[in-house]
Length: 206
Image (cartoon, rainbow, N blue to C red; front, top):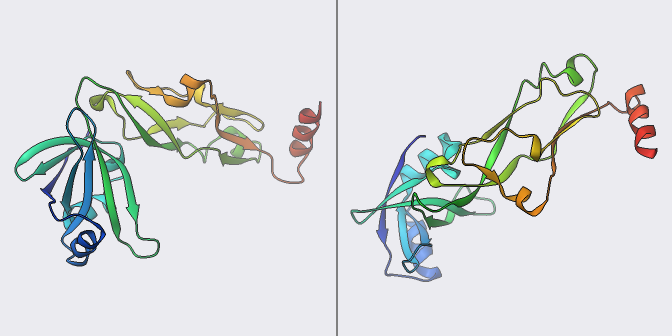
């Protein structure tokens, strides 16, 4: 997994006014670190490098990040990111401390493979419908995947891949399944007005 390292500084000037001044200087992003046995810590993260990685690397959301806080290393995951409602600006970051012996929960993106050659699309003229675009997983920090791949090549019209059908890396579990929530992830349905759509509707009615 790619390693990301960001420079950070402990913040002593707190409050909304201080956060605005940080962002206005275009140098740092206000942030907080919490979790573990230590107290929450207010920090500021060097802006340029964070924006560069954010633009290029989707896996920043699911990777263990290295924060170099005034020269002291700290491993974290990104738990929340507040963006400006209409400007391309990050307003605040929330990080959670991690260690190799405790599992963490993160949302990972779903990548759908072989959509163009899907049986239900290429041979049966159906349409793929993404029911989920991400899923919350639980794993040790070192076992976190950047994403989950779902092969839809064999999916036919009227079929759905559910959470229980997903192939998970070793040590990874889906949080929703622990609570009995076996949600549909992706399906193929017939185009409107087609014979297959009428058959689907009749089957549902029965």
